[in-house]
Length: 505
Image 1 (cartoon, rainbow, N blue to C red):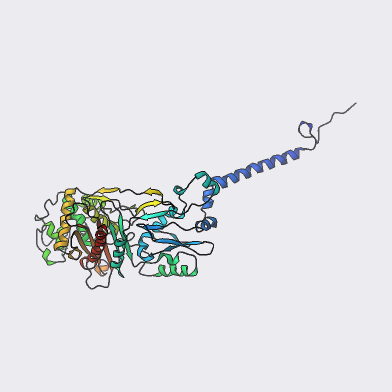
Image 2 (cartoon, rainbow, N blue to C red; image 1 turned 120 degrees about the vertical axis):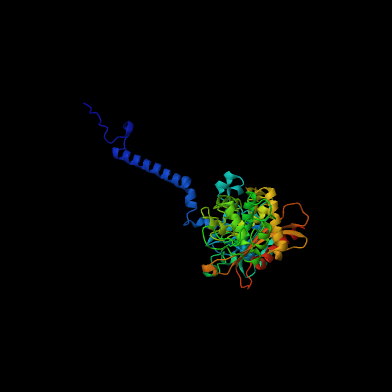
């Protein structure tokens, strides 16, 4: 009798050669293939960007520096460039006038990264911004980096040069704004540095960086944007605007109710004036601004009140932690919790009040623009390498600080300061100039060299248009014997305003 086969040793359907062990091995291999495919998909699709931007991945860095970086321009003139190194990172950043524009450009270093516009606009300049893509699908397949785009600044070359020459070897800064648009016309900080000195990877680049970091004068500190100073009497413009806007003063030539001597509320301390001409009661606001009387302005700040003083200060940019131009400025401070004596001191720009030159330029610009404060902007447009526009910046209103009527009164106060008071050194023939000086004490028992300030605006005489320029200047350290805003800062502001008025003509 024939015996049935047990099927042992046969595969499915009775096929010979595939044992149970073989089937399990095949299934195991299939699972491995699926897992490997899943892992490859996870890495190449979902985690690709993370690996691309991992600091250990040198491919992107090599690719980034394999082509020239896009340029930063003032007007139509590039103030940056690129140069071949012959090394692994082939193209490094160069600067045509590095020290003059360092506060504008910042730096782009193959070792130390990017700052200022080189940082905020790095995507455009390096060619990695998706807005530079042509045919997106092909760009993804080819994985080819786009040519770097260009950043057109709002800087006025003549104003920038005047600012840097005026500052010279002093520690200080200048910010100049076009009041009607918020365009930044000058942004200067001294002492300055050459960002091209450490743009590469050589030993010389590293030595230059180390030397700059160790310099006690802090040449890499952007004093126009990133440093705050007590604004001293320049803040009296804010106090005058607040008093007028809130009806504490209705007539700038009418006597105020300020006693003499003026004793800080809740104390036995007299608020001292810098000139004896202020040592009398009931001085009017116009005289108080012209002579820079602490007693009157401190009293008006108290009469206006903390909340309304704070509101006016914030209209001009104080207490804003995100003031981006697009580079972020340091936060200017006006305390929101103070007693009355502290309000009095803050109203003359002392106590804890501190401002960047940028924000004090916004104060002058807001007054000049009939009470409308425009958002400051440093970039005019972004463009592809072929010149086509990627983004065109539009003027934006920051705050309506006061009515045009109140602004007109503050303009008159500032004009009188220049014509008859402490700001005479800013007078320009053929132009109407408004300004305010400031000399702020600091240090233990006021032992430090005072900060010399001047804020101002100017327009051609007889013009009904908004002034084309508003300026803030601070001298943080000087060897001069007469350290006052009128002596040190006003002449610099004058030269910057003249440069803009001349370029307009």
